[in-house]
Length: 305
Image (cartoon, rainbow, N blue to C red; front, side, top):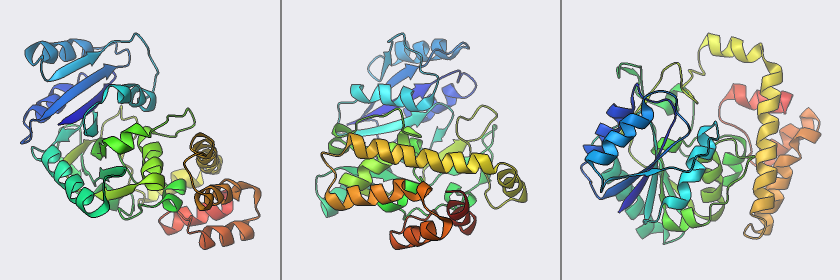
């Protein structure tokens, strides 16, 4: 049995198509928990229509809170998940019919190999436009992300895990402690999985829709426009790097009782990078393998970190 956690906010344009793709899954042993974050469009009406039509399939969480961001909306859903496997779902994507089945199969194969500890499976995504037409077959390729970056030293500096692709097992869910310093729910949970368990890659079975209201979008990091945008905002580069240090500091504080000495030392090295000269920072990034992927990102860490 799988619990699917669907966070919504002003999603009426694509929500029906997303929920329809859930109902067409080849594996139907799942339950959907939906939490809306105060939508002002027709989202609540759509949700209630599906709840009434499929009362055994959908539970709507009504807590009268509004967080104003996807991270806390998903974190608020986590306590409601009670099954062995838990997935996140975005309101505007399309799940291919065998997404849940293949994710669970990947997890069960990983459990046979790695044991019953915390496990996280995630995947690449196919990027599509507002009308569902494919823009790019691989988000990993589009953003020069390496799916094999699965370890704590790699995830401290850069996230390559997209929440709507994730499948978590019960041991992982039970050790998630949330933080306001988490940059995103998926990045934070990736750190937890890397520190205390394992991360594996599942088949890509999701269409990741891009539109004007995306909270986090798919950007072509190889494009000239993206490069010009970054060069014009060096302050933003510096702040984004500093935010990763704050996230790591929070992670160390919250999980100090579970992290071993080597992990704690690694995180302290990472959070100290902003205090170092560029030369010393370059040496530490190399020694502890803390670099981001991609040459431009590495240069940015050295210069602006």
